[in-house]
Image 1 (cartoon, rainbow, N blue to C red):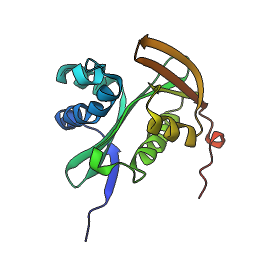
Image 2 (cartoon, rainbow, N blue to C red; image 1 turned 180 degrees about the vertical axis):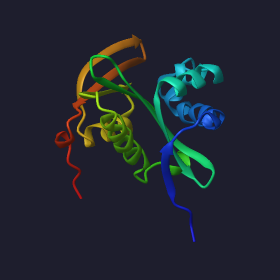
Image 3 (cartoon, helix red, strand yellow; image 1 turned 45 degrees about the vertical axis):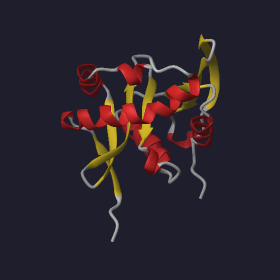
Length: 167
């Protein structure tokens, strides 16, 4: 019998696993853009621990292994910034990213002050863009980082009725 993936709040004890997973997951993005200086690839363990302390962070586990993670924080203006949605390469294409995105939205919504969700991804990250659009996000801006990379910002209303999943 196989194990099922569970989603729960991250703890400080998860920091090293999250950092290693983040490094693994962002290799494909770095290759896509020819840029191995992306912040998730250069983030220190201490900086990640600081983020865990200041952000709502969820992990997906397969047994004891962290196989996916996402972070979010609500700004004073009510914008919930969702970041670093990562899924282990062997676990991709099974709906885990969507489950984690829905879970972090629900968690940030339940904490009370989120009025809208916002996230960003690279302009060539087609899988990410499809996932976000499938979950009701719309592009609200693009910022050129350098010749090979532009960041696409997407947003959606945080009201529970703003997105209804289809079966």
